[in-house]
Structure formats: C-alpha cells, structure tokens
Image (tube, rainbow, N blue to C red; front, side, top):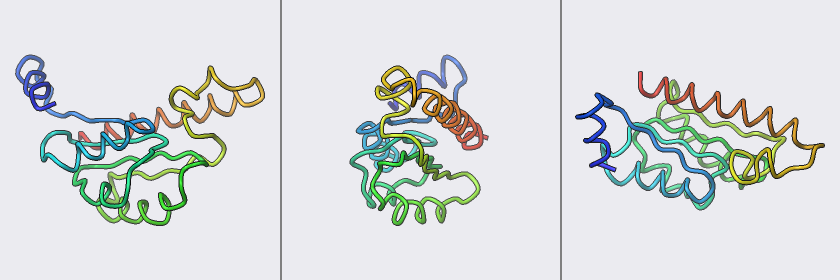
Length: 140
C-alpha cells in the first residue's frame, strides 16, 4: 500500500488514502490502519467480523464502523466508546438495526427476498452516503 500511495501522490497528486473492509476484510483494514503509521489516512468497516478491542485501540486515524443488527454486542459496548473518545468529530459508529450481516456486500440487495429488498436497498444507500460523508470529513 505504501508503494500505491506513493505512486498516486507522485502521478496524480492524491495525498490521502482510505481503506474499507467488509466482514473479514474489516480485520485487514483495521490491522493495516493500526500497524503502519501513514499507510492509510482513514479506515471504515461495514458489518465487521473478527476485529477485537486491541484492533480498534491501535487505530489512530479516523474510524467509521457500520454494523448490522447481527454484529456482536461488544461492538456497541466496547468499540463504540473507544471510537467516539478517539475523535468525536470525525469518527462514526452506527448500528443498522433492520438489516442483516452482509447487507453492504454479497448478502446485499440481489440476495434477499422482495419483502426485504426495499429495506436493504434503503439502508445500503444510507450506509454508502455515510461512508462518503465520513471519508470526505476525514480527508478535509
């Protein structure tokens, strides 16, 4: 990623880079953001799996965590206070209580019944808007 970031800066003037992980990819994104300073300038995760308290504590860039109703309760009880305390103006924690794990990815709009489709689609668009707002604010 450092080479990618260097290339984008040199060739295209891009100076900020973010990373978003879905499900297991959240672990990769949080570990990357927490291990190497300067690797990413903001990190986000949708319906995160496998992250733990140490992963969240290690991140020193803006964080956005968007959970479904099926993520473990410790995301709310442990991760949310850490996220909000680190940077209350840029960090985001949000729980989508009407959609299932995976609604932003492979278990999204095309994989649900017609009964669920409208709700999943609405929440998908809401979360995508949240991600755009988050990265815009993090990079400002």
